Amino acid sequence: MTKLPISVLILTKNEENNMPGCLESVSFTDDIHVLDSESDDGTVELAKKAGANVATRKLDHWGDHQNWALRNLPYKYDWVFYIDADERITPSLLEAMKKVVENPGPEVSYNVRRRDFFMGTWLKHTQSTPYYQRFFLHKKMAFGRKVHPIPMPDGPIGVLPGYLDHFPFSKGLSQWFERHNLYSSTEAEILMQQTGDDTPFSWKELFFGRSMQDKRMHMKKLYYKMPFRPQLKFLILYVLKGGFLDGRAGLTYARLIAMYETMIVFKVQEKKKGV
Image (cartoon, rainbow, N blue to C red; front, side, top):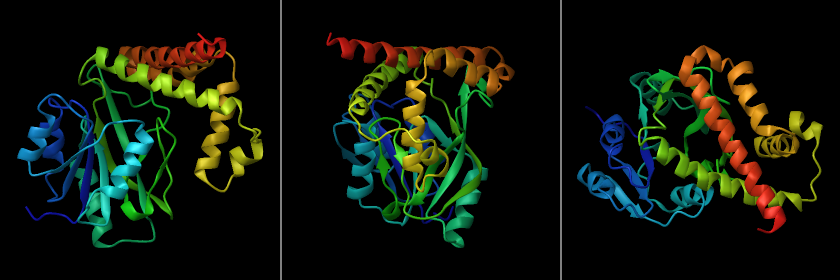
């Protein structure tokens, strides 16, 4: 198989079970980079055996971690696909990327539609958004925000056909809770920092702001001011987004996300009381 001029970035932390499938799905390239966060299982050995370039760095915050990877790893090619170990590139998505590198346009980054799977079900409806910027010119990309980082490409954004398949519960519910416990702590820190932010919320900036970063900032300001936020999140995912159409998996996932929002609310309250 002829290799494509696309570099691949994988961020890992104890992904021994997920790595074989992930590495197989990116075998179209001869330039795989793994930035490992001090795994203590067989993640690094599997990556090296597959011929990947491996670097190790302690994870502080995802946004900082991703930006470090973009600026410091020696990519062979201009185009980079960023993938997590629990994700898989489908043949239709690979074909779409091939067309881009063979005939590039003005776009510097592309949104990819991700299919999240839970309890053997594609959560087709129970998602805030199915689109993520994962394919980009690495010199034109940066990430903002510490957790759930926001892509900030320097140029036009396109959309690729095909799917990126995601298995967020591949390591079990316990690991999901562990990860989201860390996420919620960082979200609470960000919210406390925003309490002293002098930038007022603006409907105008929310709908007509020049940059996606500004729009997301004002959306967050509005969202975190709303009362009963966990219950609202559940209603959005399960009712407005049609999560009920995903059956039991949709109901369970919407409840899990509502629990995550509850963790953030309680941690902010804890910080305000100085506990």
